[in-house]
Image 1 (cartoon, rainbow, N blue to C red):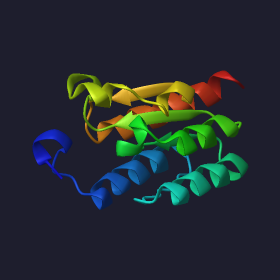
Image 2: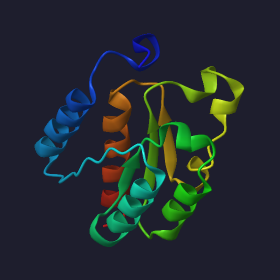
Image 3: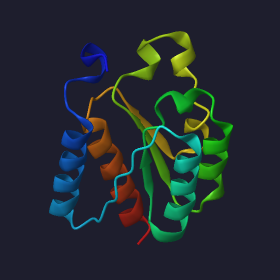
Length: 130
């Protein structure tokens, strides 16, 4: 997709980058990708039972998925929303995030590094609660 907006890394490249970073910190990660809203809702619910936090890039669902928003709101673990591009510097409709309303924070505009920054934020949040 539009490398001038999203960069040239593949999903496999990004997932490898996430696993490499997490491995260096002792954090365990699971990466999931789906274009199906219900699959993502199910993944959020599963994470709520099995994980300490969620880093999510809801892509276009960011702007309209009340189902994904409600799933995030319904789990008792923190969620960080991430975006490769700066959603606030693009079309006006992209600046509105229904999912971000229930996230602890949003990282946007740092390319694939947005995922690492989101993971760092979750780790800091978890460590601050110890």
